[in-house]
Amino acid sequence: MAINTQKYQQIGSELNGKATLIAVSKTKPIADIEALYVLGQRDFGENYVQELVDKQAQLPNDIKWHFIGHLQSNKVKYIAPFVYLIHGVDSYKLLVEINKQAAKNNRIVNCLLQVHIASEETKFGFDEAELLQLPNLFELTNVAVVGLMGMASFTADMTQVKAEFESLKSIQQKLVLTYPQMTTISMGMSGDYLIALAAGSTMVRIGSLLFGEREYKKA
Ligand SMILES: *Cc1c(COP(=O)(O)O)cnc(C)c1O
Image 1 (cartoon, rainbow, N blue to C red):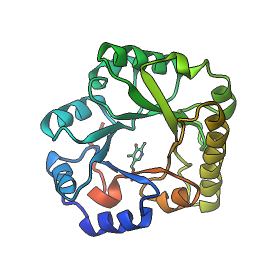
Image 2 (image 1 turned 135 degrees about the vertical axis):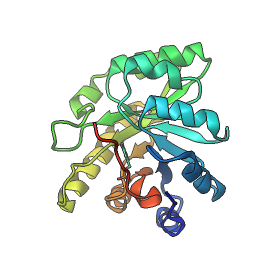
Image 3 (image 1 turned 45 degrees about the vertical axis):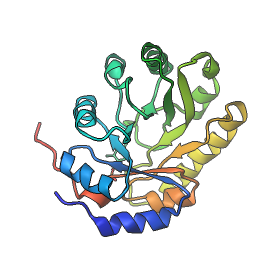
């Protein structure tokens, strides 16, 4: 449980201001987050609501918390008071619930719509046709849909990964004509962030390169 400072600096220079680094700290201890915070990192990503709520309470207030996991409607209320950006919004119903909870907190919550770009069946998200048919997003006055998020297939075929990231970028370029604030493209993880960057990513979500491999409890 120590952070990789050298990697952190290397990634910083590779991104070179073109994309924001989200340090994905899921399953990692508070001390690791503090170690990156001291180096100037302010954007952190978490996947689990309870873990995010616990960590937020113990860490400085100027951290921007990104929720990057699969969010259930009944849990939105726990993160609505403080979350900075919700990456994985995969249904209009969820967006309506976020709008409602944001309003209760007198906030406007930033959201990204998750797009299904991978070939695998299991990944959540909208497809292009669904995105183009969404109800008018401007009617939800307490959410700001600022862009799209996607995950590439889990494959060693980097040609395919590149094509999937490029498809996300092209969908964003269509949507931005209707919604000018949709400028964020959240794509790229430890294994593929350089490909994502070349394809136009504006936000990369990196965990294991910074914090080391995650250990999961056995189910
Ligand atoms: C865990 C996770 C990441 C970070 O993955 P690494 O491979 O450790 O960089 C990025 N995005 C999402 C949605 C994740 O769940």
